[in-house]
Amino acid sequence: MSLELHPISIGALNLKTNILQAPLASYSDRAYRHLAALYGSPMAISEMVSVEGLLREGEKTLDLIKRADTEQPNNPDSIPFTVQLFGSKPESFEKATEVLLKRDIVPLIDINAACPVKKVMKTGSGASLMSSPELIGKIVKTIKDVTEGKVAVTVKLRIGINMSHLNYLQCAEEAFKNGADSIALHTRTSEQLYRGKADHSYTKTLKDAFKDKVIIASGDIFSRDDAKRIIRETGADGVLGARGAIGNPFIFSNNEYTDDDYINAFIKHVELHEYYNDSPLKELRKFAPYYLKHVSKNTKDARVFICSKAVTKADFINTLESLKSN
Ligand SMILES: Cc1cc2nc3c(=O)[nH]c(=O)nc-3n(C[C@H](O)[C@H](O)[C@H](O)COP(=O)(O)O)c2cc1C
View 1 (cartoon, rainbow, N blue to C red):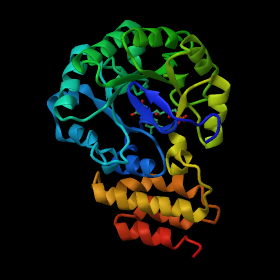
View 2 (view 1 turned 120 degrees about the vertical axis):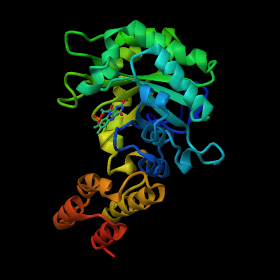
View 3 (view 1 turned 45 degrees about the horizontal axis):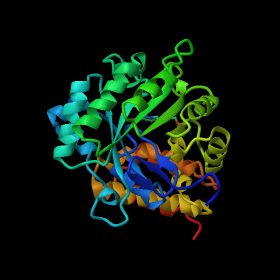
């Protein structure tokens, strides 16, 4: 392992390395997380889950918190499963945590204070939480109290709502003061959404301010080299593989990879999706451009077919097999 890539601990959890699978709404379902685990992610994170939805124990929300096989505690090779919660009221976080405890779901809960989607922010959730650092602290404390400190609690922040309100340091301070075990920082404002370059000088400032705390960097990590560089330049303890991991689970592993490796990874993804039956296979169409952009031969016809017509497992697998070199 390189100097930058190494085991880390978050609360009582020991992770075997420090490029972690990021939460990705409508991507990081069980099949995606299982695949990431097979390729070396040391931890799994759910898509963002509404605390209000959890309280209602609705079927769709409960589906989001089902563990993959790679996250089952009785599996000796399993990795910790994190549920990421979004909401705005400490009492709803408390009750949602009770639902998770009742179902014996998680060793780790992540609080989403980073989502920039208007519909979410309008309810005071996601990145809106950053307008009240004290509220973030209160939510951390509520979860710590209700879990009697047995569950690690992490917070995902942006650098601020916009460039005139860069208050990630205050938010981190409140979170740590109330017992947070780690902060992940996406180094864009919520107003920026995903535009522009992520500026990791903010990660360095955060790590310098909280030297003995676990800081995870997020933003524009598209390769293992990006991960290493950002860790080296900022002192961050680890990074999140987000857009850079979609169609590229190799970001979590050490291997050299060929065109066929990418095709095989996509095939495995299709098989896992079918196995978990998370949603119709058609949902996997959106992954085709991500996997196939790594394949050097001309994949245009295959991509167009998968993106517009693939429905059955055979549609996906036969098209992908036809791209293989042998
Ligand atoms: C499609 C998509 C869905 C995302 N869903 C979530 C989410 O549910 N929770 C969250 O905290 N961040 C979410 N993010 C943000 C990522 O986890 C990550 O912080 C962000 O993409 C920056 O990293 P990148 O520039 O390396 O992609 C999402 C990002 C994308 C592109």
